[in-house]
Length: 135
Picture 1 (cartoon, rainbow, N blue to C red):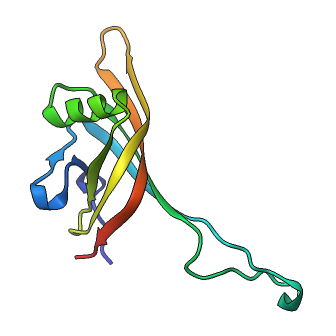
Picture 2 (tube, rainbow, N blue to C red):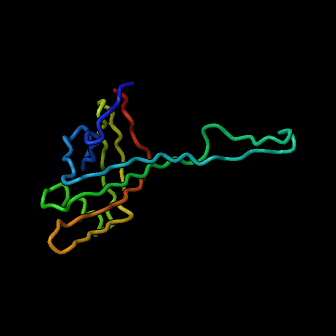
């Protein structure tokens, strides 16, 4: 696998099939996939932990930060945060892979320093099943 450009990891508002809009002003975007385990260890496990494959819950967390601008996708992000809305977002990877899911914005912070740009940070948590397309 060749190296991929970080600036090509794009967070977009909307579904992949509906031509989603890039959330403008982003500087950093990260993805975290969590798989919880179900421990089925018992007396027959000979002292070793045994996990139940395919059980437990999976979740995706997206963290992003950047400059707050007046672009439509940033406004959508901000409105979804203030209204506690669950909406479809997707990540586009440099190699063409995509991840699409409904997300709730669980954290949204805007900050400003005198004589500097206004910044924001946000965290999106998955709700329901996601679709990962490997290209």
